[in-house]
Image 1 (cartoon, rainbow, N blue to C red):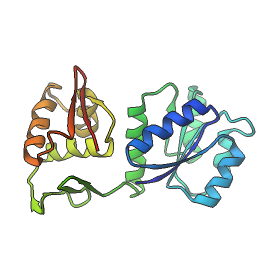
Image 2 (image 1 turned 180 degrees about the horizontal axis):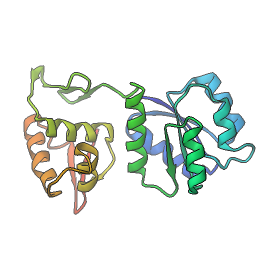
Image 3 (image 1 turned 90 degrees about the vertical axis):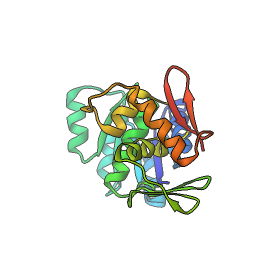
Image 4 (image 1 turned 120 degrees about the vertical axis):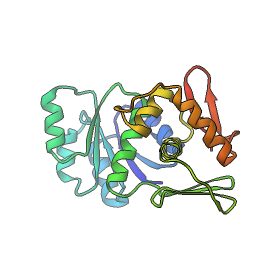
Length: 215
């Protein structure tokens, strides 16, 4: 679980981002202006800041100049190349343009958290325990052998728990866009994971879409 500060002046978007990230296990605080954001960063020292550029009192670039060494992802409607370049050159880890899918937000957050070693490393579901860093899975204390592809697919479900992911998203996030194979390959691997770990009631099929790990 990471501590994430969401800096977004549109309340509905701020709330949606908070709910989505909370569902995946993160602790979220909120700010609606640049000054609120700077106070929150100083007081809470979050693991990551999601920062809008168009804030009512000061823009996100000005906030970034004072934010210190906390990782930042810009989340903004400003999609000009000059803004993207300025944002990334200012030291931000990523730049997401609105509108965006919540699954994309979660995935990009996880990438940055992994980069700074702030991603959750140990997961427990029923009698299954997963150590991401050691690439180890146990069930009722006994080791379970997952192939590399099975492990990566299960890892994606874990870090995006409670969020429905399409087969194509799972392919991309687990095995990379250059993976050559039918998206139905996901189904085969999901069935193997369910059987090996006894998680049939946790890994849910989302009709005509994909899968969701419910915890």
